[in-house]
Image 1 (tube, rainbow, N blue to C red):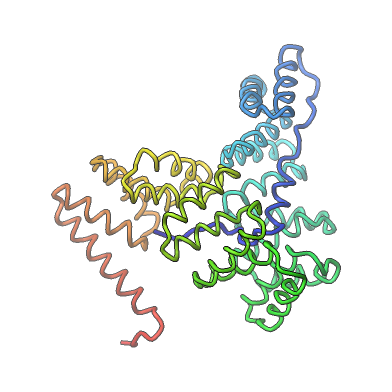
Image 2: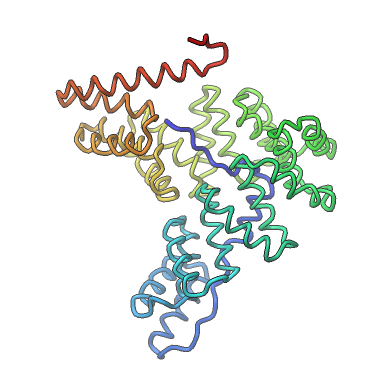
Length: 384
């Protein structure tokens, strides 16, 4: 399946900044007729007291009568985001911004919602706009740098962070992003200087998470596991740590340890995409389909339309003999992602189960072609 792991690989202070920013609000209501005004006030009160479900019900009821109230829209978006319903939050924020363009707090929330679901390409232009309007604000700058790093815009990250690194010489988040961008831009010596500087400040969970996630990205799974194990020993409460630790365990063959790590991450952050997806996939491998479905459905809620999650759900349909449902889902997946080899493999099996030999043979031929193309791209392949 396509490896679409979280692009937020910094895992040090960038994530903490995103969490700290959270949702801007809830905002105060404007004057309305008394009954509706009370509904909105009650929703705001519920949101302020942490009763997000009640707040959502109140905002939805209010917006049924007043669909163009930007305060209610943005507050509802914040409540949706709090519950991990980022796609729904994005819809509300966009509507609010149509009514009040250039509302900086709502723009920031919209960018954060995209950021939370791993949509760097959508989040980056909004963070960039916020950064241009207020270049001295640290949080949008860091989040923009993290998005650009995920998009491969390494030179832009270096240009953005070089002056900030001089001002914040001891900031681990800045050092991580800058060092990673330098290494990825083949400025390895400069990048290593930045990373070494972090380590000279003393061994820390943040530094080990930095090194471990970098090694994960470079497919050095054994090295990543070593660093992430040290991070766990130093500070097991570090945000996102167990998600990456679980990935390292999984890539080195410790599926039981990986499942435990993913559960640990989800206990602190139920909306972590990678942990939901990977734990669901592991439970599916054990044929615990009822156990897998809640995790996979939560992952799909966090990232609607994600092909990897949809593939896992389709394979569960097939395993439970819902062959036609599996066929429809797999056909949609390969249409959207023609190079998704595993989906073609499973679709071929589905066709053969349905006695559709011609269609099965076609899918098998596609698999053979994709495998041959992948083999040609391997290092040391002989040119024909």
